[in-house]
Amino acid sequence: MARRRDDRGALTAHVAVLPAVLALFFAVVQLSLWFYARSVATTAARHGLDAARIENGTGGDGEATANQFLSQVGGLRGSTVQVQRGAENATVTVTGSAVDVLPFFGVPITVTIEGPVERTVE
Image (cartoon, rainbow, N blue to C red; front, side, top):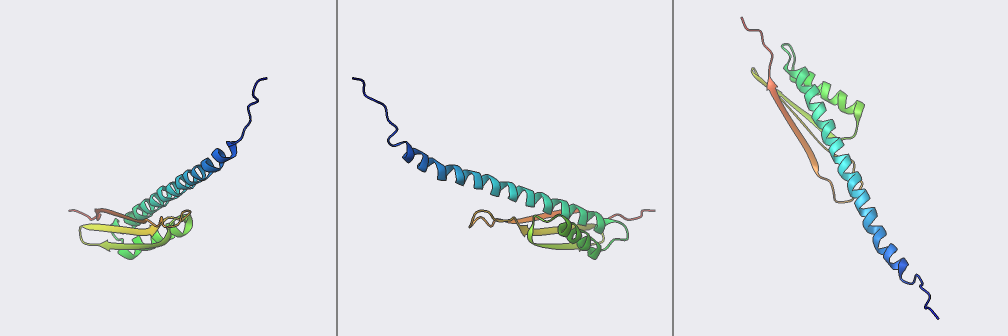
């Protein structure tokens, strides 16, 4: 008489694997949200720099443009925009954080972009 094969112990393997798969899934989602938030911050900084560096632009124009972009797109929590415009260079810094799916992940995002100010040369 042949011994019959049973599936005792199979549930234990499934129970051990499921949390690992879920943790990996949420880690991938969290990383994706972080990259998206960084992309949003970079694009907002570029828009702000474009508005601040034109010949008659001001730091306030750059800040307003970057904040308008951030409010329309979303994806960056607690965002702040700082614009410094000098005679030759303009600098825009956007800070914030990504949406949290995993606890204790709160990695801040800071993007700084600098460019020359347009001016008429005679």
